[in-house]
Length: 135
Image 1 (cartoon, rainbow, N blue to C red):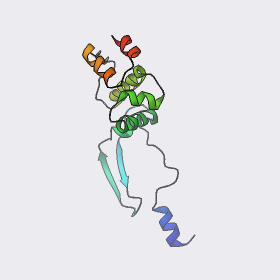
Image 2 (cartoon, rainbow, N blue to C red):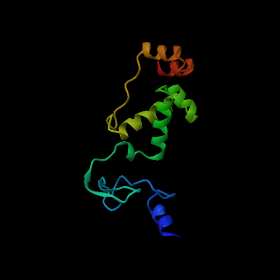
Image 3 (cartoon, rainbow, N blue to C red):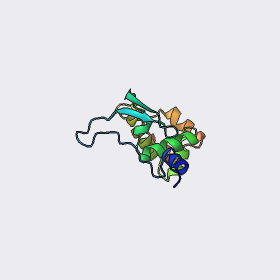
Image 4 (cartoon, rainbow, N blue to C red):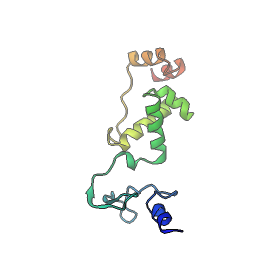
């Protein structure tokens, strides 16, 4: 390989990049980022960098977030895309919110009011059968 080709290969992201672990494999505490590097020019920064909350999501949570955003927050569409029931999609969203620190762990999502359930049926987000179970 020529010097230019090897230099280019060294400065491009590897085909097999790995997801950074979120927790220490020895003591299970949260890992921190202490070094960042530019794949193009080789510049490196060292220090203590704030952790990205989204980067700590597992693959299933990241997929759910992508589907949720693509459906513009329509849980009925999320359930359909993930081939699960509406209550399962809602539970997964609650778990995602917990992982992001938006919802407290163990906190039960508040039960929707009758008016909210009827509005979801009208919007096509819930089937009448699912609405009946919630009421």
